[in-house]
Length: 272
Ligand SMILES: Nc1ncnc2c1ncn2[C@@H]1O[C@H](COP(=O)(O)OP(=O)(O)OP(=O)(O)O)[C@@H](O)[C@H]1O
Image 1 (tube, rainbow, N blue to C red):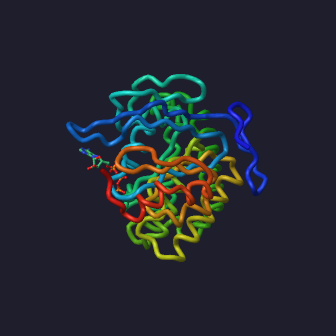
Image 2: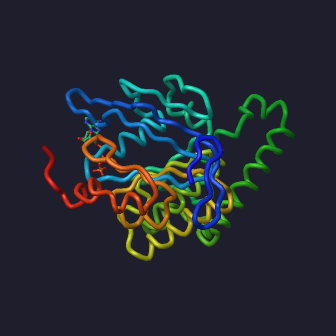
Image 3: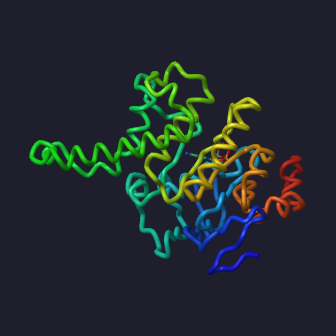
């Protein structure tokens, strides 16, 4: 049962907390195109929340609103009980919201380890000047950052490629390195942009398992967008369904699966 303040318990016994992020009546336009039309939904602490919908439904636009890349013309974003002012993406990241990208955005010439280390930038408070004056603090910070990064590398089972330049890796492993970099930031909310796109069946199964394990082991709240309805249904606690910029469904995977508007949207039934 969903309770506004207390959260709920999932079928597999995980405790989901209160609302951590709330989108209130979001509308986003690009000139004459309305990419998001008056959409509201929330994300709860510890849950895996999916936003799905057919091509052009507005999923990427919504992810970009959450991560501060786009600023909606109407509506409000609430985070941890406070209305979020207009923020730059790096400020959103500083608040503990990390993301991956649909088209992998890694440094191809750098090793896996160095790529994952870039996820720690938010935690590197010691600038070059301070490092020169106060070597001890910088060293201490470096040790802590390395510990976190090594933990993430072990957890995602990429130890064997830690020295390999990312450019040499197959697609599925690159996606895993991207997940590692986002996780290295120890985010409160992890945003995944079509994490399974372009993967074969085995890679999709691996990625699903890692997403579930991350949520389980670190308690990370995860919000993901995905085009393919099948892959997220087993993974998600609650699902928002978008079509033509509107929200046409919101609920548990079972509720969404039996929603006629959702079935129509995925079968390509014409709209008025
Ligand atoms: N930067 C932009 N400028 C103009 N129109 C845009 C822009 N980004 C998205 N749109 C339009 O907004 C609508 C929603 O697009 P969006 O990419 O958010 O959908 P999507 O559900 O992520 O689609 P896909 O599954 O194909 O990635 C589409 O009509 C798209 O053409």
